[in-house]
Length: 310
Image (cartoon, rainbow, N blue to C red; front, side, top):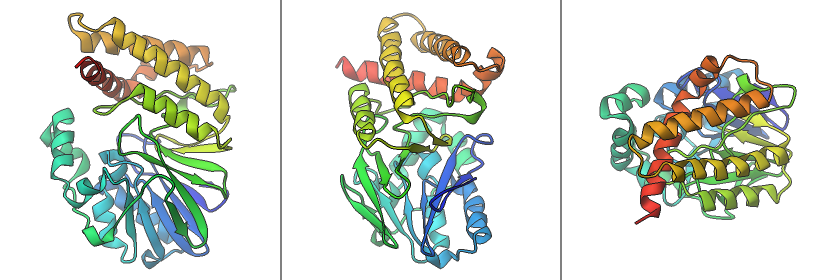
């Protein structure tokens, strides 16, 4: 899916079609990938490079907004294929790209070790000399095109987002939520926050969203799933939902079968909002599309509850 300003969204093939995107930026014959999916995504990314007539030697950067495996799991593998590329990653995430053992252990604690191997493959370590640690206000220069990095915690403490002045857009990873095209209506995009384990922080997340909105962006490029506009409205929706999701979790703290109850309430909340947005999919189909996110959001909210009360 091609956009203006040399931006292309590539479906990484993770989980289902139009769920997980990598973004390719081409500027003056040089290129950068922002988020790369899993090891199994790499053939799709390389095929898009070839289709654009860009050689692997012309890729200067692989940029991962954070090191969750649906964003960064394939980073080590694709760097094997890109001889001149450096990996740009948050300082908190860099050690996990160089030695992914703890990253694998963390994912295995959520999904199970066998599921991690099946879904993501064997993670490839990134040589330390190919890693650039991206701090707040770092500028990544892509062939004269500045990509400004902002520290945007809330979804994860190791998350940053990229401001691209050329397109007046952010590459927002997961900080600005997720928005699946199947839920689009005449009212525009439908969005929801992602509170996946283990570092959800509602105060930090709202602060990061507010900081990005100060740029008055024309669009947001989300990993799940690509470009959305009408950013001010979507920002209001995210603030409203973060407050409501926190309230749901707090109201159910200490009840029996807390996790299942949170999932039930999140399901009702999201589906009611989608219907009010004008989505005509059946509630069963909507639930199927959001099932993974509901599960992970419930886990993240529960972990936040437990940590916030220590």
